[in-house]
Image (tube, rainbow, N blue to C red; front, side, top):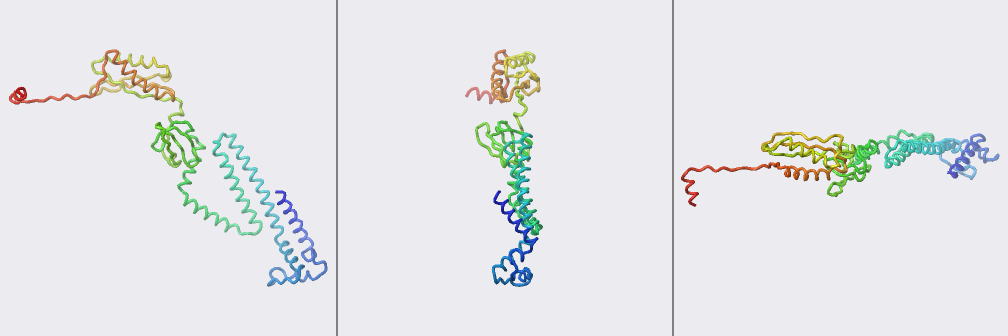
Length: 328
């Protein structure tokens, strides 16, 4: 930075001297430099016959472009400093807003790069370069890259949305894109899950945001849905009391909301109860497995039966066929 500043200072002094005193006076000192200086850059082929003529031509160029070059360098220096300042302000603002730490440095670098591109274009315009063509070339290149990477860009945009809106976090049990599992990592391009069988599943983020997202963890509680069947010959009130006693004996079942026990259907061979207790997310599967076992045991201990589907086959025959079968 100091070297660039010294160079800018030297070029500035040199350009100012040329503009004020003229290229001939700066080096000619009464010699034949003035006639050569009057030729200009567009007077025809350059013919250098002495060192003074070369220096005169150099100083003529500096007189025409020196201040523009100095202005462009100043734009680069100041623009770079402003870009750094703004990017650091954006980074601090995102950190205070509690944006995901994975996203903060990316947005910081993206903003800094975009501002630096504008600074470079402004510096080229200050020198006299036609920036319209530069912008057109950059636009065409950006379009070509975007078409070639449209799938990856879709995943990237979806990853940014996931990191900003946070429909789920690492450690949540979710259902996305037809699969279920515990979230292990949320990357910019994909999301990584571990399913209950400990199989690693990588889902592209475009598929995550393109469908329904089921988050089983975020609310903190879950409801267990069970169906308990008893025979038509059993006492329904007694069956309800037995089921409620089993639920009350398990401390993991939450009192609020209260468990629901109700007759839901008169099936072909049974009366069906729905049993719907609420538990904490971590207790869901242990309580579900325990209740399935305890409810069956309790119903049988109280003399009730759990009917199951069965078929009875009746064979009708005439008397002669019956006699043949009996004699056989």
